Length: 205
Image (cartoon, rainbow, N blue to C red; front, side, top):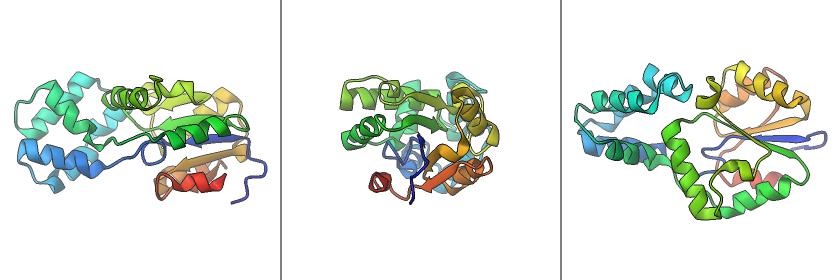
């Protein structure tokens, strides 16, 4: 890929910076609820509750109550959070070190669809790995869907990042593991790269 003219890098988080295994969360809920995993995939990821939670339109407590309804079992917040966070894996330092290196040449950003429970969990993973409690230490700016009240692949979320930082979209490379998110960015003439595995983007630089 030709990176000439690229001045800004925008990274997705899950599957790009942090290892992600969504099946682990579905399996965890299958175990504690007795509901087949296929029902969890349909019931959670296709639900308005999940979309609203990623956009910060409902809070942690309301989301947990929705999970309890899906489970049909009264579960503690701790049990629910552990199952919900099961998908979050490691944040290897070689990726963080690469971001630090790239930050000397490019302005670097995170743009992630995420939620409050996950944010606290990956901040703890980051603290354990690097000694720093947030991604703000490593990137010029971090954008989370639940804080922005919008989510990928809606064009307004990319437009917000461009406008707030006075970025020329043709000088921006957006890296994400979901094709639909790349298509959303491409509508604004942002350059894109599909990340098939978390370490694959390292080969670009």
